[in-house]
Length: 137
Image 1 (cartoon, one colour):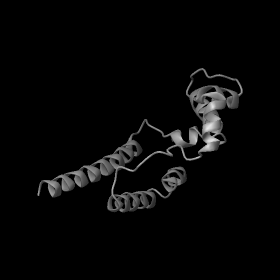
Image 2: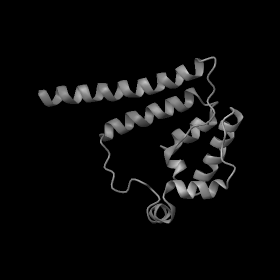
Image 3: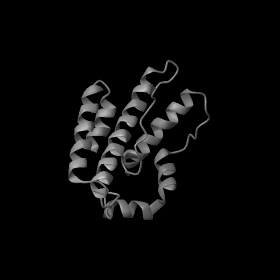
Image 4: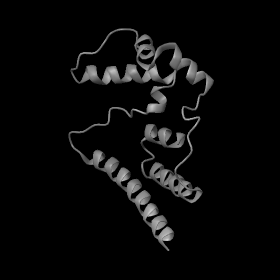
């Protein structure tokens, strides 16, 4: 039926997207002149405790690479960047940033995604930071 065909194509697209994401990461690891300095996880950046720490780390990486960076208080800079008091109030009222989010995947696709995340985490278990990020999802 057309509906079955659509579901098959949808599932193939999801699998292709997952594989493409994994291949991109694997490609980064093989580049000779490319070093992963940090993972920039949006959810961590928007967190009131983790965000300023990420900004400090990013500043250090950029400074080590020869770029000028601000020497200001990173917590203050982060606070200004994320929207000040209103953003913090939203975070503390709703720690999960997507309170109105309805997943666009089926429960079967969720299982596939989780299995792929777990296998990817196992494949790169020496990368503890990537493992922490994947575990969060």
